[in-house]
Image 1 (tube, rainbow, N blue to C red):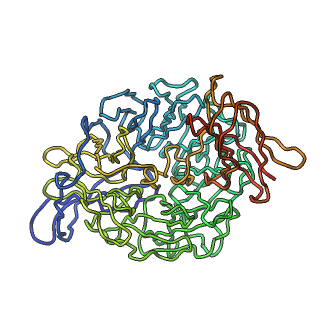
Image 2 (image 1 turned 180 degrees about the vertical axis):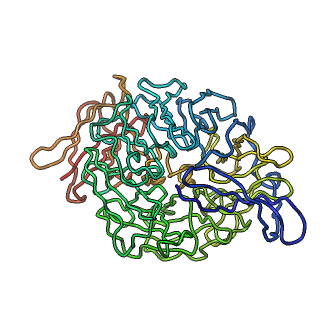
Image 3 (image 1 turned 90 degrees about the vertical axis):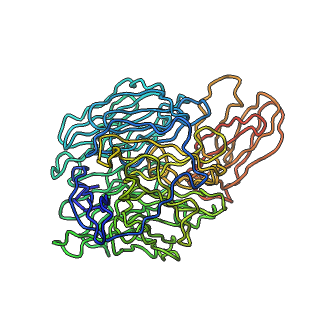
Amino acid sequence: MKHPQTLLLLFLLSLNTFPKTGYRSIFNHETHTFSYEKVDFPEIPEPMRSEGDTLIKLLPGWPQSIYSNFGLSANDGVALSDIDNDDTLEVVVSTGYFVNVYRHNGTLFWSRQVSGTAQSAPSVADINNDGFMEIVQTTRGVSDGGCLYVFDYKGNIMPGWPWINNGNGSLFDSPALSDLNGDSLMEIIVNVFALYDSTCNLLYVFKIDGKPLNDKFPYNFDEDVNSTPAIGDIDNDGEKEVIVTTDKIDFTGKLYIVKPNGLVTQIFPIEPIDTNVLSVYSPFLCDINSDNKLEIILNLYKKKSPNDFIPKAGILILDHKGVFIEGWPNFLATNSQAAPTVVDFYGNNDFNIFMTAAHPDYCIYGFRKDGTTLPNFPFRNPTNGCTNGFTAVADIDNDNQYELIFDSGRVDPIEKRGYIHAYKLNGAEAKGFPFRPSKRGCTFMNGVNLGDLNKDNIMDMVIIINGHDSTGSVIDTDHICAYSLGVPYSPEKVLFGTYLGHNSRDGLYRSPFTTPIKHNSNKNKNSLFSLLTYSSNGFQKIQFELVQHDNVAIELYNSFGRKVNTVFSGNLIKGKHVFDIDKDKISTGVYFIKVYSQKRGLKVTRKVVLW
């Protein structure tokens, strides 16, 4: 994110007749800071719904508050994750000078003070494959400095960390976590952004011990790098790529593909996009056209001319070679401040793409995968406050229809409280919305995080509120509020529930309609079995040995988490078993074989290249 653009965060302070005097927020994308100017706004009807009118209830133990820095308030929400394997979700929050982890009931698990300001959303994953989650957090200075921290699930700083940025530039965005070299350990991929300094815009790839992946990193770009990179095997060759967007003050944006060995390919700009474009948002990766390769989905700015500093938003989809897929790009009548949201409503590969609008008239744009606009879109903004956080997608009212859930830049003139909106695809707001959080302040820039905190099979919602005191004045406190939505929860009820769709922040689409594939780190000799894959006489074979009689399923998934074949399902006796993979039914590429016990709930997964 960068380049100063005025975002209409409306703090209306008067109930006088039209027009109303208030304040709007100016978010400076060069420094990631907020400031205010006094303006007049037209009078807007105020929906005054409160949480007492709905099934939505504040969970016991919440809200919690953390001292922050309003000019550098939290961006992109929290992480909900069972970091300690206690079968409930913790809430991982980074704001101000702290990284805090709360239990589902609001009690503090641990708190760590950090050097610099923790503004970006935390990234959470089992990066060292020990069965527990690690938390990775960037911090920033005002323009330079910052650190990269890695904590274990107990809050201890991992060996080799923190990494301290002693050069120009700062760490503005969340790191991406992904296993780039296939050793079952995740690398930490992060950009360092130095405004107008072409020598210090760097892509770092760190191993778990804090050392660079190889001597090709950090890689220096000639343009500003100011977003979280996306990670995925875009060409299905068995090797992941790092996708990085860059931009300059003259709006000449580029997009790069970086291999783990440091080989860099520039694929953007290309025709028919001219040079008056830039991207300030994280790309997203998804197999949009079902060709077993990943497409690159990207929000961008486009200028009408080199001297036009009121750019319009656009969204484009490129294939892995940098060619536009049919129906794209699309340019809009407003701009946007967030990465795209990509969902498949029914698990049939019929993807829809949504983007928020930083504009007082519109809030959400929606497209089919062929580039045509969805019916009833764009949604007009009901509270005249721009929408700048990510868009969540879930069935939050249990009507078997999905809603789009998003924040608002407005705070009402009476109660000084913000808004959370939830809209159905027909343009109607869901029952109980707009929702009014219990704490004074604004939901701006943080979106909505969804899950089941206490594992009671009821959906919960966690939001961050940039705080205000009892008089409505801005204060340096962020409030973390957790609510029960009062409706049933299951994984397929939430299609997109956190920043970039996943706590690893790798920008890779994952389907909620298939069982997530995890590497089994259980080394106990009483575990289910050992699993081998090999080729023999032209056949790809799966061999494993059961330690006892069991009901077993063998399934084959492609690299995007989609099941493509069931090799076997049934009862097997104790001992060694070998199965052939029918390669005539699948194409060449990278796959995951999952063998699991339907009786005991244990599983083992292996990566295999089929040819």
